[in-house]
Image 1 (spheres, helix red, strand yellow):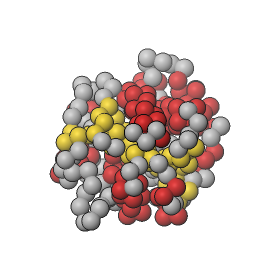
Image 2 (cartoon, helix red, strand yellow):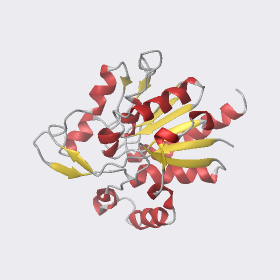
Image 3 (cartoon, one colour):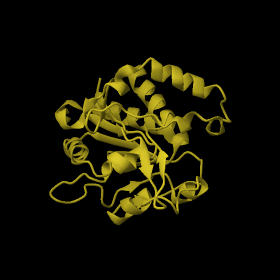
Image 4 (cartoon, rainbow, N blue to C red):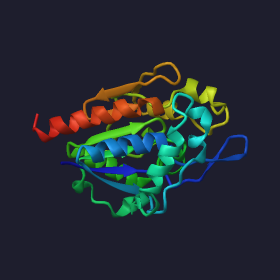
Length: 237
């Protein structure tokens, strides 16, 4: 079985271009379902944040309006978080040995654009795991964790097909004009080839060993795509 590193945000505030700060963090419905899927498949999962500070949950992710299709989900997510103390006592990315991991995964929430997007240690982990033939997974704003990666001075994912939370979804959330920058634009500027589904619809993109999802609805499909890739990798195919 494989060992997988989840990297969560420990940022608690997002500074907007209008000078205001809003609460932020990681999004539980992009963290818990993949985490549970990997564990149930027998893989070992570790959790890290950039400096080993406790990860921060964006409480907004539990609001009823995000769970109209499943009103009982917030309570299940809260129970799962309460039973999983690792996210409150994570590893520090600076102390993680990339050679120990077959895959790295970045859940979303706006938190990653605050503390993962420019973190050198996170960038080194991504580049090392990718360079060693490992899998890279990221969902929603999680692909911000890919931005600082460099291999031989270049971004290793230039030319790769990928996705993230779309500009249209940012507009529907009322943030497109207030964010200091848009993740989709940063990824595209580095050479990412982005595609999007309509807002709220699941969309998973697999290109070589990079697997990305657009939004919370994409979490189950992304987890399954990573599990399939891990099985293929383990079989030496």
